[in-house]
Image 1: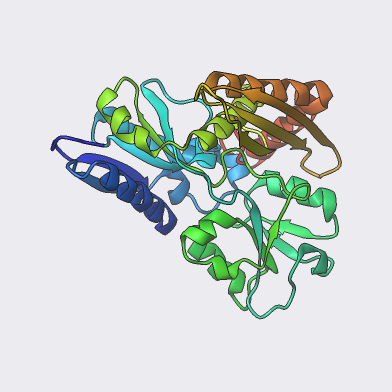
Image 2: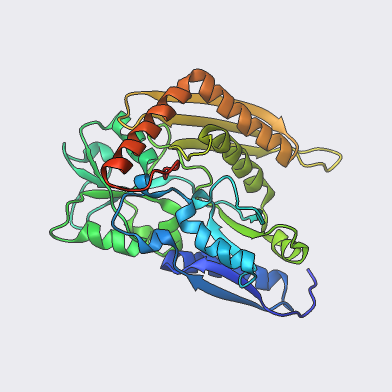
Length: 347
């Protein structure tokens, strides 16, 4: 695609090693598509990076990773933000919007066992083994299948969490981590095994990179649009529409598995069959709500409509009661720990 030389467009990113790698992926793709356009990357720490001592479940959800960057976007010091889509709230501040979604990598979670231990699967872990994760989605789903295991919060970037896992005096037998993040960091060899549904359903948007821009910024929107992989975009927007409906103002531990198969049409009009399996599970794993929708869709609007249909079915199947209990539990713990009461939890 042709592009005229203009002032550099600034790509904003968190300063963690993984976030830098993800920003570099976007940077390289943009340079290849727009060889005459200059780009630069600007790194920032966010509230989520600065607070490493408290559980994400109690702090304030996904906005912890995005709002500092969005300040830069709105004041013009940043032109676009690179996110892992699973960390992006389903609603944006006024003046910000989601633009491009890149092709998704493997969305599954993975088991990473402490160095020196021979266990290969969750099934092999001894009773009482401590699993490190800051995700209530992962804990809830794993308690359903492995009630004999113990779970403990673990914070920090991937390098830090792996160091905590491998420490001789560390409490963890294993961690649960997104496979895509480990692969991007070059730590694919640390993946002991991949965890498929129905044991663990992926988080909404997991393994997809996305670009957030200022609303109405047509220049940046056009530049970034080349990044979009429409199949991933349709699937992820459907997942996010489901989550947005379930949230009701607060994030919830939802798992969604998407399967999209493009259809061939003589007219050249894009069409695909999209199947969504959604889950909501109580914090102790005792209640599990599941629903499935499967339809032919022809665009973003139809994808989001299908996602809302999945959310409606989950609510009809009893997800509302589970979500109410999660909100009450979180707020009670926030009060007990003198943390400002929020309406978000991390997936």
